[in-house]
Image (cartoon, rainbow, N blue to C red):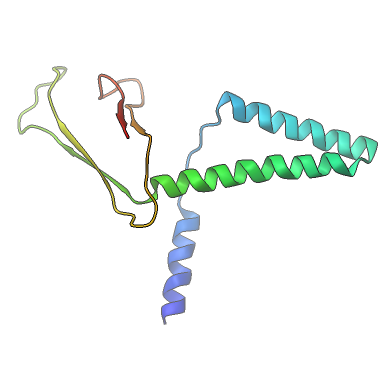
Length: 125
């Protein structure tokens, strides 16, 4: 029974959709990996395949670590009771780390979309 619960929990984590934004440096890494792959196929050079494998492994490990850093965080936003439309209001934001074994550091909270709710981005150390 316990193993079945573990598998369903794992399946739920895999099905969860995560949106990634690829930065400019990531685009360069992907383009470099594609060029090395083409060169490895075209020239038959195995060293280029090793370079491609190292580049893709670096991207994979980077995404895994970024998921672990954000995994156990809880963000709580306390707003005042009455808020008028289009007027600034003060709010209290609390960020908690529920992980015991791995700290989360350098967390930046910013608004997204056309109408941002935050005046400026918040940075937690």
